Image 1: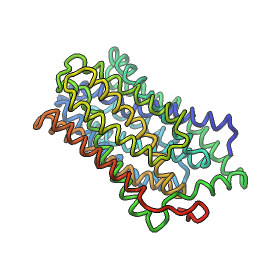
Image 2 (image 1 turned 45 degrees about the vertical axis):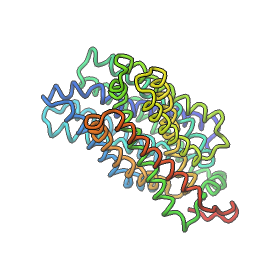
Image 3 (image 1 turned 90 degrees about the horizontal axis):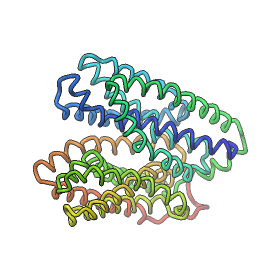
Image 4 (image 1 turned 135 degrees about the vertical axis):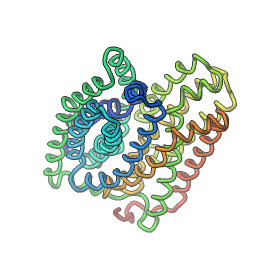
Length: 406
């Protein structure tokens, strides 16, 4: 097993690459999209439609990437992903025709499957299986600062540079920072694998999930359903938070209220890190979905009351923060470490395929039915996720000594 110092460096290193990965490949897009649209003479909705297609592409490749992580090692996949992300950002920056640009944007989200959360979670499980649950919480806490850092950084860069030049800088970050870190983590993984018997007890303990073999299929379907419903609700709210707050009558205050989402997201992860040791991932999944339901319900009732809108942003942020932890910890808790990468990939495929439709579908709901109809749909979807996660816990579980390896 890695030394305590190396385990700490592993989590911080992955946290740094997640900040850069999410910042350069995901969060920057909404800021640069209007300039991209203007560059090609398109309505901005077309660019966001391309981005939705790219999210779907990421979901389609996720299962295969998961199998690669199990077979070749997640850290090796992340190393390749860093180089590929840099190359594709350069291709996008150099694209002067529509076909190349569209292919590049779609490829960005496909490559994201190689370097973002699922790959990082799998890396932790493969290197420190006995401590992976806790390390996932620490990792998501660090990575939670991605939007806080990269939204203003992207805005500041875009004040002086074109979107193409910004993408070239982001490509350099992936090459100069993420690639060396992932190379070091690959070396660390090789060291951990060669440790022999010292790592075998931890791997054996982590190999068995709490769901017995005959219930795995139903548990997977319920988990995928919960993730999909929650993912749609969160994606809809995240893409439309400021316009939604404006639609309920907040006006210029909408932007200020929306900024509370990020700190609330980090707060939930920090609180879970300090106090969540005895809370199961399944309980966290139910709680994360319940926060989203409560947040949307508050905004329905409060309307343009500023205090209600603030509570809405805080509750959704708390739910989103826990949801990121649950995406990595719940599959490990339920199904174990064996085939963990492929399991994450299959769940991500369902979640991303559904979430890809959220920005467009939610925009239609707001336009056709108004903010209240759109928020009511979030409440219904969130309640569906609560029901799905709760149903997982209804089945009897084997005693630890009788648990079968997954």
